[in-house]
Figure 1 (cartoon, rainbow, N blue to C red):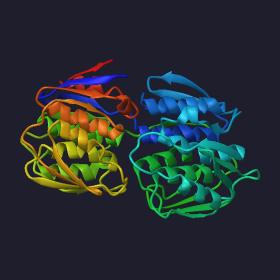
Figure 2 (tube, one colour):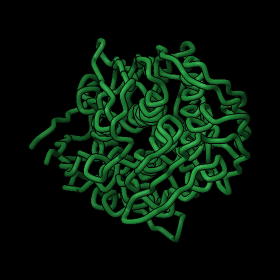
Figure 3 (cartoon, rainbow, N blue to C red):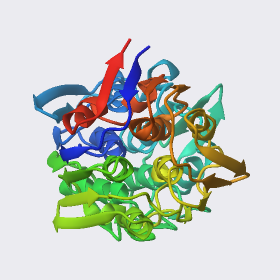
Figure 4 (spheres, rainbow, N blue to C red):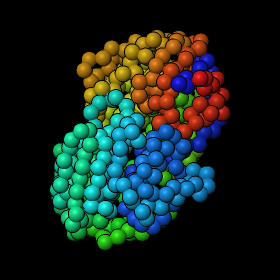
Length: 419
């Protein structure tokens, strides 16, 4: 099992290029199941969750080939097994994304309940209730969800009781082949949802309102092949922005969409970071002084992303004063707190709120990553900690960050992967 060894105290300088968004590439790959023609996807990040999704698509019968660097061709003309077995998807949360496409395309689907990080409940019942509104008959037993719609799906009205990104994506993919109109209300507005809709439209779908809380879909009889480039990863963008500020360095962050991290940029500038947008796809981030403590609460997009909460907390653990960080999306997303404390952070949790008293200095230690974004927070803290830090179980980070140790080393970090 791999670990990271990091020697802290080195400011980061240089340029880093952002990879394609893992959370956009996963639904895009699932969408390839909706057509019997080839789909070519560019900017696919080389991360573990993508490899798992590829294995899942191949299990169903799809053929996947590499076109060029970070580009995949998916041919789902033959779907022999519309299933997502536990052994294939047990390490990934996104397995539920194939439920809608499979039942829409083949009339049936059998999908294992999602696995992945233990950061809180992401109930699949929201997907189930929505697909039932489209005419699917669904049973849940023995850890699987089985859906059938032998005569095809019918358009309907879906209202999510609470915003769900994967639920919105799943229903969106199912509805494009349903008969008639589907309206999704209280839909997720995340950029990844809009990116999925853009791909589906290229494939022949009729979608209006993606990126807003109400999405309208007119079902079509079939979709065709397409070519699409995945959007930049906004969470990787934010992580490197915080790394620049936290190490008192200066990074140029290229191939990004700055507007996707506007909420983070606002908080960072309040705390004292200097962030300049050089053009529509490039940011320059620097912070020459110790930051001020600034409170933050996570929200659905366009609010502060829950996937950046742990990284922001690591930065605030070095700030002047006390900050209050409130997690409103997941109920168990403070597992990084105890490990940050091993590095010298002064953090107390009360329910869904963390009280962070900034320290002058963090110190290296041996820590364990508990989930994907917690891993990133430990890397950021280790970059500024005095001495050496060993981070175990970095396979969590490999699920969502492409070659992060190589990118960090390229801008000056003293980091290496060890076995």
